[in-house]
Length: 495
Image (cartoon, rainbow, N blue to C red):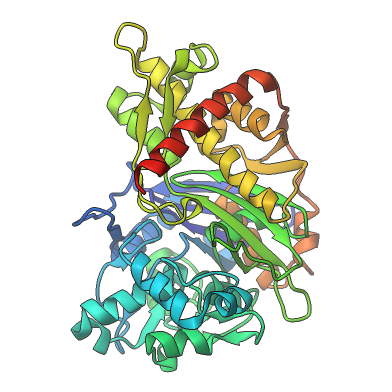
């Protein structure tokens, strides 16, 4: 049996075709070749076109087929991973009503804070495990307040993965995990949050039908199947946000296990069996892929908006023709600490771990007589690693104590400079695994199709391909303390 995994990222769509028994990747493709744009008509706003996502999904699937490395008619299930917290609105004809307000958009921060106070901080944290913050529910409230004509036309409120599944099957469904990432889910009551719906004045009919995460979310329509050279009726058996999905792909399913990614944003994701929350809401707790009322598996997530996007920014500044591999070589050619240069990677909207502050990105201590492009690249990658240390310290305050962190060998983890800094600053070993979000989505499809009996069975076949151990602790600790002092100064200057 073959499985298709779709990873709807911010920069591109990636699709992999996986042979279920061996879990080998037969083909993989990304579309578009260049990184997709984020539409930002005002500072702090971030949108993308859902219809463009759908076009790119189709192009990526057809690109996989073009490899001729498998028989498309042998594909038996489809899984979807997607950028979390986005808002997609469709009318009764399943037509998109506006661009998606995506994860790094900051416009709803004040709306979420007001709802937090209305619900009551203690009740909100105890029941939602989060404040409404800048999540999907608050983005919907922004549309309700600012675009009433659009709001009146809403038939269904979707997350990005729900939208792609709808385009494939014609059905709209949701899961407890999806509702929790939008902060629509009451963990104490184990149902759609009455507090959120009442506070924002939302219509329950706008919320799709609730189904188990590993289950059928519709079957591929004939017209879509013909276009994509697939069999009609193939089920979509899995939908999950990119970070829970990444954890699944790394076999991070049980309490104490931790996964990390360093793509456009950076994420640390640990699993807990406790309905816990950070009193300051700097980290977030969502229903993990294997969450149920009987087996409470909570994904504790810390997100740093300005990580890989900062690395991309410095790459473009250094020269758009420069590859990421060449960028990493530049960084490696400079001594640890980049001759005193420091970088704060917070130039991509409100940072939740900084209490939803927008402080911008900064490069500090620049000396025109000493520092080169290579110094700036290294400072950026070390600064990103420092931001992960800052975040993991917050998670440690909240009971997550990893001794090993698992990561895919991709994005910033392809850089030895970044990876060594990450491992040493956090004093953890980093285990690397093959595969990525599209691979995880394919494995999720296999679980949902019951090819694998459980998620644990699917994950038991995964073995690490490498490890990075900590080194030079004192040197990196000095860099971190200098970096943190600069961050504290920047935060204090805004008071």
